[in-house]
Image: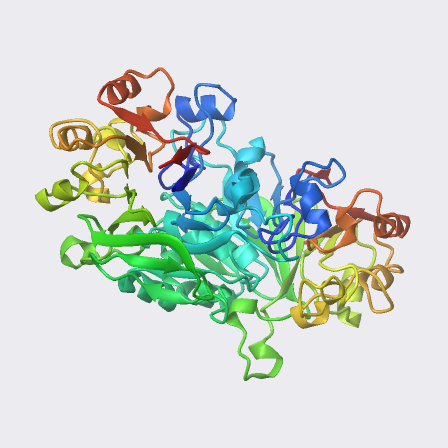
Length: 310
Length: 310
């Protein structure tokens, strides 16, 4: 069985974002029960319920560990211990790599990412807090199943098949003079995560467009976590809080003709869950018409702490 | 008047540390009221109660902003706004710079640090999430009062005098082949922070040793926040959770002949507060004999959320 735990449901900045001052952010800070706080997106997966693999490491990771007993040392473990056995990165976004800086103190785990992302981490010496004697960095092959191992090479009962999806290089790595800001294949990955019994699901927290190839992969899937960044492509501009469209940020929207609800509608997916939801997306508001429409179209909305068994 | 707000009292890793599994950490996670959770060390200071300067930016900054209304946008501010007008760094420790990665989204503020630390940030491209069009980086001169300004150059009613103290280069920048791991003057700063009326206090979250020069500075101070990392130099080794002494990490201990309690005892300081307290330090335990001894010696123990008016 696969144990899946949503650590955070929100896109970069979390909900509310530190500098958000719209009515929704103010209601959330005031404790409105329709608007619980959300941390930044990440899930944890375990085959045995004891050793966990993080998919992305959000800036909120220390809080997420404090909030989730599954990520805390077992009572019978050593004086310094962690059930976090590996971390797999889907890209180099700040909201996906910053949490690595919490995992210091010479604790062993394995770090997996595309070689481009590993190159970015190597070029930023601050990630040297992850002592290389304890934290091996392993490249993710493309479109091949890879058995995940912990820091010392013991198998974790999980395999991952990583594949490139349409996307964009991380904001902090954009090259304004290059085509597509210097984006290359491997900058944004989707993952198919499988247990020993072959049951699998997809984790795709960022995706700029549906392709025939991606649709074919997702056809008949048991479970898909999918990019829920924006409801509408221009919602940040319409709200007066940003200048970028979703497309410019490397995210397809939920709604509309080219959106994810339409794109995944006919793929016979048993369970579809939006994750990586931006603070401007009305999906976060209990009772919003957009949330009702998404649910009517067969989608769930990830929440911090959601547990799924597969 | 100076408004001082303790955002976090704990040293790197916070309390409990993510991989701590000793009895104290387990009690803290179980909600023992004698052992509240603490976030990583940082203080915020304001002259007007509206615009705040952060002293260090901890990995827990997003949580600290969620927890402290003072750091949340004012109701009458713009749709994207923050009362955080500047950040001053005392060194390049991961627990002092990581929080900068939360302050993205093109929000204006000023960043102050020693030129060596600014060099380290410049060499780590991940800090480019702080858009240079909005976040000027300004070197701190040594031993000269500097009026702090916000991102657009407006004075904040606060001045800072930075001075080097005995210390060590950040762990992730250590050079194993160099003397003192490559530490140079400016890697660890103490700060004297003053309001417009000249009232001032000291913020020294890391200090490896008391010198005659430092003692002379602190003489007759109104308030000193001081490095409370370890109670005893060998406490991490004695507890079986580490291999380093406090001295090796660049911190003088609280207790003992060369400790801070003894070193500051005769300096006529009106108020002394330990901050940057490691998870192994018994000062964190309500009712511990060490805490009683520190208090008897005239010390307070910083707590998350402590407010001081000066």
